[in-house]
Image 1 (cartoon, rainbow, N blue to C red):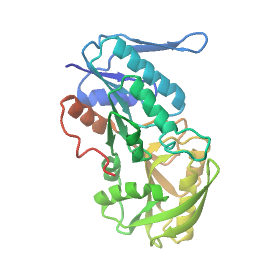
Image 2: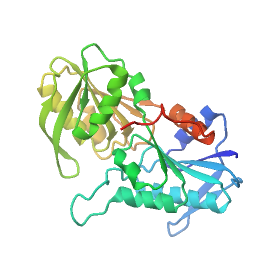
Image 3: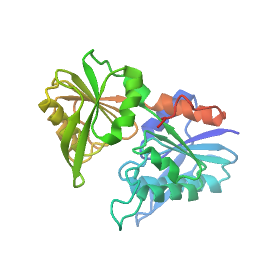
Image 4: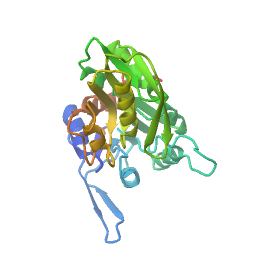
Length: 308
């Protein structure tokens, strides 16, 4: 079965880098919009009988990128593709994993249903906000971890300490600890509104140490801002590193980061509208290319997946 790799419009450079690592060409496709704004997509090459991988993070605007992903899948399915895999480096709506109150949707479950109904037999994602999202799918979900790639980019000092900015980041901090052999501190936070965060307490010794704050994503930067200030108040060195898989940097996030003594490392899973000045970006192409090649060859992904 021939492998076909297709790029969505959310992050074409990443798809191009994946294709380059794999030594293949991206499948030609075009898209435009009708006068009323409706999406028009065309696959310009034959995908009949192919094992198709569509690279499309559902980053902001998440709804548009999700709809495009579904349209690409439908075009491929109707053109005779044998197997469809959604490669979603950043999975939007992953924070919608439960009802926050009695009259709210579970957005992650809705997205999972749409992808399955759209014809995808499998999803490849990177550092989901909550691994429980896997349970929303009836089919296979390959949950990859970028922690090894990002940890390799760090050059921690002997007095460094890993910091989970909330309890939800503890598992991720443990993944980094496996590569860096550093102690872990954890911050207990409370959220006030969509972007407001207050720190309740800090557990762990950070005085005189260089903190490495690890998280799966940066959106508004509220969590990192509160964490960094709490660490400085606790006597840490004013030499803070932030490592996050997904750097969305929406709203005033870039300005928040520029006002802090932080160096930030993120992957290229998304293309942010703005970014802080002190930013290093690590490519996911080797990880995604390896995963796609193994899946196409029916090989194990054991050493690539994020173990909960």
